[in-house]
Image 1 (tube, rainbow, N blue to C red):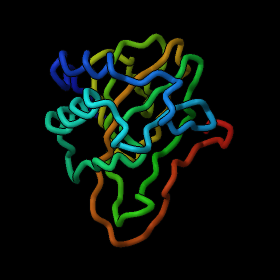
Image 2 (cartoon, one colour; image 1 turned 90 degrees about the vertical axis):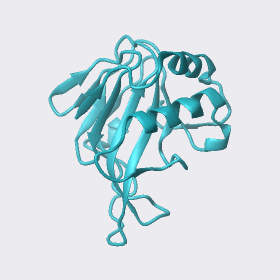
Image 3 (cartoon, helix red, strand yellow; image 1 turned 135 degrees about the vertical axis):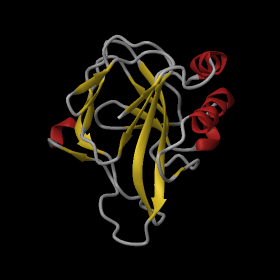
Image 4 (cartoon, one colour; image 1 turned 45 degrees about the vertical axis):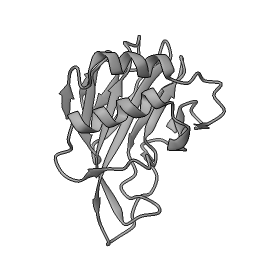
Length: 176
């Protein structure tokens, strides 16, 4: 796990936070646990797209490349009272011969609750902080006490081999 403070210029963070869609935005994908995620990168507000590109330029993955089709990445909103159980992220892209090597999460704002737990370490959501971790690391998000807004990017490598896990694997089915 790598923690990067002030991963993008603060004026870009503030602009993205101001433009970030509310929970009523019609373009959210709604997961069963209440988490919201973008599915169409063309619908993402311009300020958030600029922030994502700045994040990619400032925080390079150890290997691989970022996917700007943003499959599973982009904007994430966890409304107050939600959590995300302990899980492993999908290892393979369902439509391309890619294997995920890392996940990058960027906190737009301070958040009460909603800590990212990777292994035995807790990362408090603080504005401007990015966390990169390997795709094969167990992680979870603790219950949020307010809306938790993040930008995320996934790093991939070309892999023409097995098409293993194309969705997240939760330790317990009820935590999805």
